[in-house]
Length: 255
Image (cartoon, rainbow, N blue to C red; front, side, top):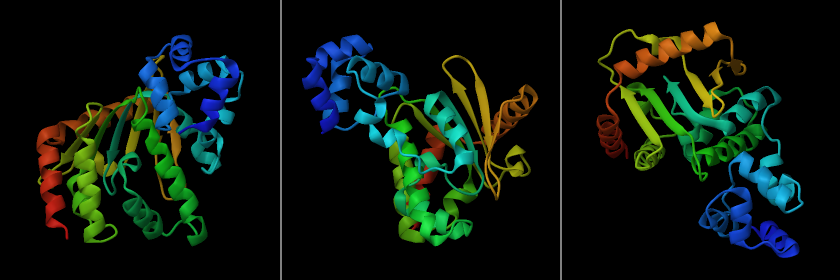
């Protein structure tokens, strides 16, 4: 139960139905914000907070707790506002699909984060996953190298749990995962991971990761190069259904 939202409704005289009409969503959507603790899309958060004469952080405080690195914040805002995300990974699963155990193993194993900061970074990563669970989630398409699903990150049980979670996520209509089989030789994915985000006002941004920090790309030439790379990796990958079958098969091989 979102008690802050419940109190704000009571104080202003709004009902679930009238707030839904004001914000422009279905009453069932507002009901989920109230009873299931769902976090609305940013524009719906803002409209609801304005109607209730509150700051967004008063009703949804988790959205304003800045535990993420300063250099990552520009991309996090882009990710939150995206209507589509295209993500390629060659070494680990995309952060938005990682289980807690798998994400912790990645953060610890990378060795770049002090042990005392791992839980903070883990909270940020898991918190970002809410973008795929909101009422109007982005279309999310991921392509991963087959090596990703066969690398024993965190051990067998962690991998089994992780891959089953990915297969389950793929049942959602807005989530698609494709695997580039190990039989493919040289392809664009060998140059490293990247993400391409599209916003509802047709802006496009890219994200590149490295050993120190990530880089947001917006230069048209850089975006064109990333789009070309995406077409290459997507073209080498298995279909969504074939990929889910392979992921499920590999999941059962872990124990």
